[in-house]
Image (cartoon, rainbow over all chains, first blue to last red):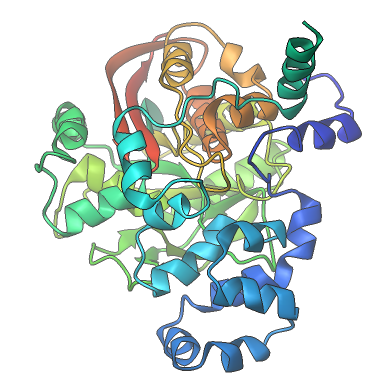
Length: 145
Length: 280
């Protein structure tokens, strides 16, 4: 059987990954309405109403103005910071006719062609991408020398 | 009695469904991926499973955030392909085996797994893409499906060990079903991929292949891999691989490998699949 787990240590570790927001309960709570709004775009009639007047459609949802701005700007990193989850947010870019990989690339520091090229060559390496703490420790050790 | 005769672990990337639906499966990009499944398609056509227990995760299609079941079993007679934002895939409806599904659901609950029962559900690419990869493009899917949906999106998701134990309980449930059925179990999802944030695009060929190694033989090391290792090594969505452990757990103490394939990339994702049979 598995050893009992310290939930605080478990949750803390989830925040230690560079460039990543794990969809924890805290994010799920915060992003509930963004995700439910995005989910509503599964229905063709809602997609049509959203694209006819995005703001009016979003005003029907209990979204903050910040969240509405993030959606209008299609700023997926910002939406995820506000508790959005990519599988829900995918309904937004799908309704825009944007391929998954292109939408994903918009969250990186690369343009889509460059991102696609990286994927064709084996993707992003996990080297130096595993732990914020380990990266900070390595940087401090380097400075110390 | 019913028997689990084989297990398959396989990615379920949505773009593969698009490739099938648009007839692009042999182009330069998709050719190497679909060629890897040629052996498997022929194998499954010969094996003729009556039922496939298909472990998958819903990607915000049937389930929204209102209710998040950790383990849910489909007990319906049939399931329609979901509209994931661009219209439903034009693939056949999925036929369930409601008798077997209800038997498994009851058995699992009596075996201490508190399953959520699904009576109505549209099924998304997590379920229909593996069907396309394994069965091609028939007018009717050649096997009945018992869908088991796992929450691998909202944390905490179930542990690898819990998934493995669920697999063992599924096997006991199948073996207590009186009808003589050839049952396969497919665990889907993965392999390494991250679909969010500045670290998006992470792939890990070495880790994925070690994971494939761990599916074969007597090792149960994979059940003890903690969530944080999947997250660090395989990207935020690589956690889907815990669903393979339900399949692996259902095959018993030892497995034999029949086929294995790995390819990078498909869209944002590393594609892998493995075909196993119990070896006891």
